[in-house]
Length: 278
Image (cartoon, rainbow, N blue to C red):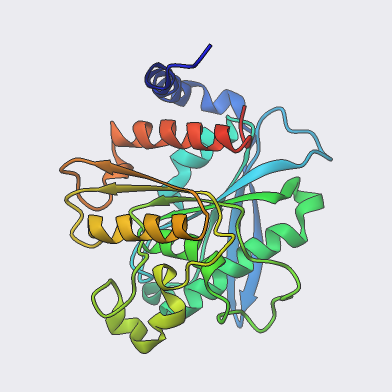
């Protein structure tokens, strides 16, 4: 019997909303550790485990990069999401990375840090319980760029990284991501002609991971046409990209209700289709 997807989505949305009340009962206290040190700067991960997690298990893992134009932002932005997915029997990770306001760095250092974080999780997959073949990268705005760039960018790598370890995620969950850094896109004044390798939409390649993309139709930074072109390019190389447009919503709409719960419900269905959650 075919499942009514509309009813399934509504049921999932109800479960997402109600689950906030029981998060504290369904996850462990987070593990905090340093994944990288550059000079005196230590960069951390905050890792959330399901309450039922047992040492030796390998679980699908979702990694979140905060937004802020590579200039600011906080690891706490995606804490509701990490609590949600840890309660879904995934490992959920918040990543700190270098930004201009705190470290006087450029977007290029941000990309290096994002790739270092993914490599760290793969390198230490055994001790951290990470399924190295089921790592989802996620983020909003510039954080969404970092999630996508972990797959599309080949040229930016920290000199201390072991390049034999892949930084490429196995799936992407993108919230109004910065995907075009070209002359008509976002951030060109800081990226310049390096957009050729820096910009995800200019580096779509065969094997692109399954992707879900959320965008408001009134987003002044990410045009709908850009998102539609991104989806088209992914599909042209045989990939999968689900694009969800929220009518009349601005940049960052997904951070507030009812869109927080709606986007997580749709992400649940996406991850369910990949067998990352049950």
